Length: 314
Image (cartoon, rainbow, N blue to C red; front, side):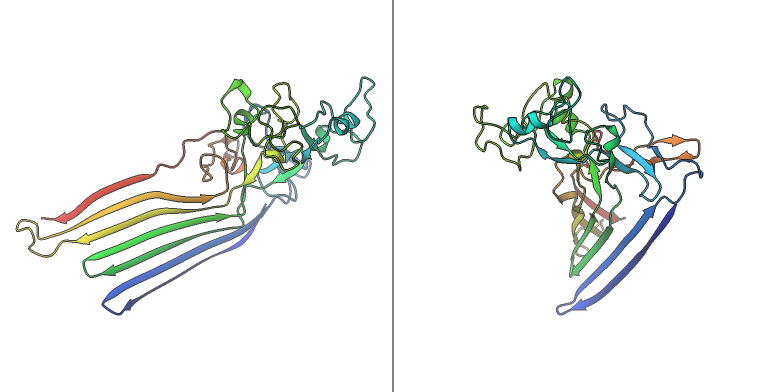
């Protein structure tokens, strides 16, 4: 396996008029990961956890020439926009269709998939690399400012370019276990004239496939589950005030502060938290959690915490 990249850090501090003291520090990291060889006999193997790790299968593969823990599945290619379009691609009783590629269960509003191997049928052989959990760049910034008795500090962190396999869509989009769904599942689903709540029939840019409890094809492991994991988070914000000397006779020094953690996250990810912990897996070689990164199988999101405190000496 090859890892190539760079890390860097830079900081600066100074003063401004009025006795203000300020500082800024920035650090960043970039790397490229690639598997070069697997025992000289095989070209790939699936990630840890077994085939039922997401209830619909394992979306992880370790493949020569690709990053470790890549996402693996079918490529989603929009929806069947009309009943005629679906019928032309639907596999009939003789195992053929009018227009290649043939796709079992083709119906209007269901997800189309790409015929990667070009054999005219959508099968498991059409699975390919559909994303990577590795970020292109991560960086953090620390800011500080002191003016008289007041001080301010903040820490910002960002991760850019990574992708997330949102396995939770199996529940809140495709309603496995008859669960609740996203609040916009009706209004933003593909629909046709006559469907309840349909305002944009045949919209090729609909966020979700057509509502259909018998749709057992759209939920296949595919790029439809892959989303951007880019985010910027205000991890820490603190404002403090140093008590004047002798303000309280028995308290020679003191500082009062208010602090907020995880106050703000900017992201386009629909899940609860784009900052996913690596799931703990152990194999023959020990810790193999890096083979199963950025798969959202349901986590407790990062807490937003507010603290008021005082630090002092006696």
